[in-house]
Image (cartoon, rainbow, N blue to C red; front, side, top):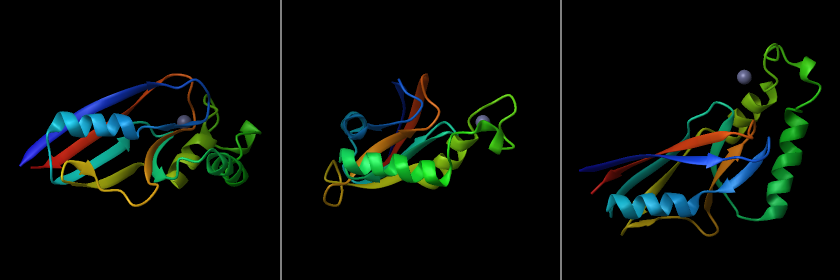
Length: 138
Ligand code: ZN
């Protein structure tokens, strides 16, 4: 069995944004040389998510509006976590959208359903962030 590990870094420009990281993950898979196995991609920050969904800008705006209804950023004073920080909403949004994605690897490719893409969801950005890519198989 082969094992591959890489931390992939991103510079996020906004407090909240969704980045399609599918090409980065495919690059990792190519580097690994693994043909059959599993790939795990997880955010290494507790205010960011990795999730799989459609690469469609309207849907991404819908996620933003929906998450703001569930856990509005402001007023900051509504959250007990916000003392020296202002990111309680980001922790909650991350929990809703999930920490990681797992994808099967078949014949050296990500074995996706139709329209599936992997996204990094940032909820407290404007700084360098990273995801872990771990691949096991043969
Ligand atoms: Zn915090």
